[in-house]
Image 1 (tube, rainbow, N blue to C red):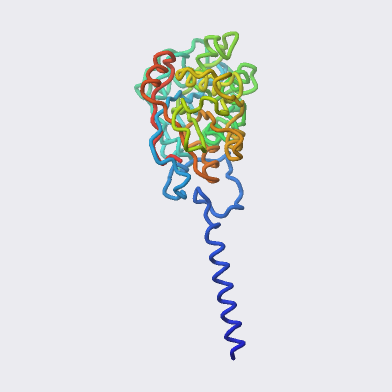
Image 2: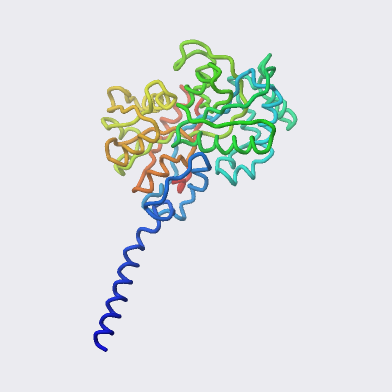
Length: 361
């Protein structure tokens, strides 16, 4: 009897021990199940709902508002894409915002006023037609655009760790499934690469930062010559300049001086954003910091491995790379102060002041 009782107690204690060991590993920092779960499918709405901090561990959440600057995320099209095709895809997006928002949180930021607000580059006639029907007159319409032959469209987005790719995949799938226009989203090197690929005819649609789009059209900074064979479909949402760190002692842009900082690939849109922000604080990107030239995903890995102190990420928040980083430990976003923000907006008017709400990560 004693042996049976002892055996029973041993079994019960073992069961309790196993349950206790498993308890801390069933939920990751982002509320996902298990540390061994498969990575998110970034061709789907990878970061929809990732701004909900109620499921986070708390230590990884950014608990304060972050003041920064932002540029627009704009969809452009080759001028030879037919007017009817661009009208159909523009209509599909803006007539179905609630459904798209269910698939990706960025859908909730779509707005007709913002979509039709671009002034630096003319609109494609198909998009302008749709906005006019909604009582929104665009600043200008591209003469001669929209007269090509209809065909399947390839949509250049961005890297797998960014919002362009995730949201672009949602938009492409929705358009293809609900209109006669076939759109396929593909990964790319981002804004500059999309403009170059579009000019070469390798893609017909592309995501671009509004500042990079302006550089291309005017043949400045990133571009030695004007690139003008594209027009605007719509501005979709704002892309925030996010300065990410895992070091709680870095509280301002000034604290980046002397630190190892990823500032995007040299000559990329992110690189110019970093140059602009650092310049507003009189920090030379070549000598005032130890510059590292990496994309979003590599920057996140380097932050996780403590190889760098901070990284510039320019994308719609929440951004997949930062969400994933936050699952491994605390992350912090660095704010710009009002004085330096005002100076930056005065020297570079294509930026807008923007506040990333607490709990976005």
